[in-house]
Image (cartoon, rainbow, N blue to C red; front, side):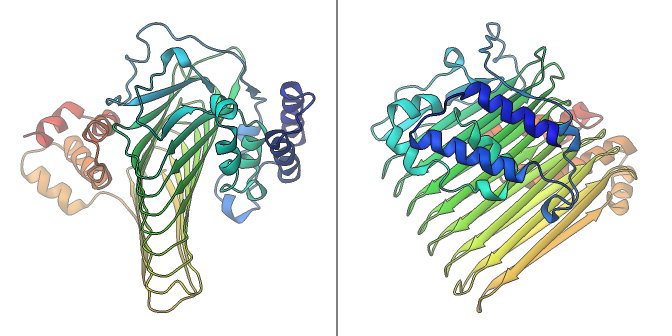
Length: 442
């Protein structure tokens, strides 16, 4: 992989030929050195045992400098959920102010792109950026930090409440040369603040590109965040997403991750519950077909007493699709009265589909409630027989049961517009979609 490493080092020199003496410049240089040391992961590393990134490394993705203007109405025509939101739009990895809108915001609320925040609120960014993600443990995070420039900053002061969600819309189109978007999101919620953030990733025209996204989140005491992450990338793209969350006293983080696109995707979610009363609720749904490969790695650290976490991830695999799930819960010494539950269920619709699932628990405290489990199987033959006996043909019966399996996750989504759009996306990947809609809306 030496050639691809050299490529990114050259890209960095092209963009930052002289560097800067401020903290941001020092941070980029430090991260670049970490990337030089780490490189890209290999299957010899335990956390990457089942995910091979060599195909990604065959491409020399150029860090995109071009501002792409989408035709009028193009965003409105995309099959993505667009509830009434403050919107920050990124096209081919770059912020597009022409397509973005952040309506009048209440006092104490900042919603802006990262480049603007670096100029207008440098202290805010400097105090938090790269404080929660670890460049020393991930070559992809180090690469993202080395090119830190594009992304978003969402900050809520103590007691602030977002009047409507913030939607980060990432759209990728075909370009002559494969390109990469290195996106960094910083989300900060002050004491007793509350908000909803949606991340949407969408690819057009079977474009070839590489999305490398890092999101850092800090929740101060009593704050609440609902976070939706919907990945519908191009079938020829590569998607790496890493989210780190730090939770303080009595804060609550609710996450819904939906992975449908990309040739190869991996989503890492690390939650650290640092003060008592913190709660995280993590739900996920992934669907793969063809030769898609998706990987979800989750780690939850309970570091103090009386914290709660739940994980519920479901996967649907068809054709030669491949999925990986690794969910790890660590209950640290002194974290008594921890309540941690984890579940991963997978539905195989083809004999050639494959999933590797590994739920893990590490417990170093007493007086805890912890459970974990994983299942891999096919559609229930008894349920198929029951539906067939009611006059439903086999294709429709299989689709109904598959949709019901996914519905266990979709029903947990609070926003009706997001929930309805995800139902449509799931139905769109199943045969007899119209018939199923008739059954489910009777």
